[in-house]
Length: 141
Image (cartoon, rainbow, N blue to C red; front, side):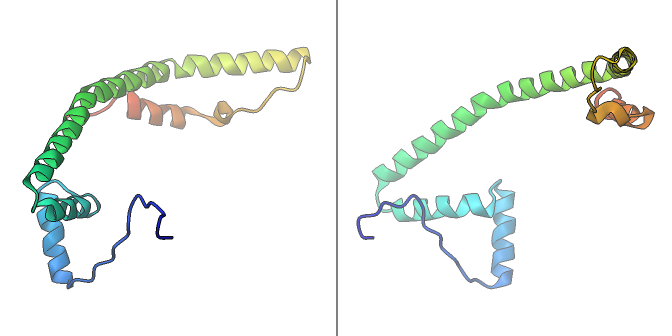
């Protein structure tokens, strides 16, 4: 057990509720969650005696933030693309469902094989309307 390497150690702190509430408010005002802030605070607290180590940590954190900052616009654009794809598919939904039902009816009439059941077989106007409201007629702030 002595030579085993550990990635993390769980620490449980007991502090008065009023202190915990003030700490949570302070951290949220600074943009941190409690789970994210404590490891950083401990890391900074342990390394504050060594200025070189503190500088290294700051540089690593800045690099990490820069990476996140670079990926944000890409992720935002991809999200927009997915939204637009959903919007286009939703606008074609009635046509696709009608075509699907017609093809299944042709299979049934020809007796070729048993027609498979699909999730969207039971979709009616209510579901289509819900999807239109979600993807096509959205409120933009």
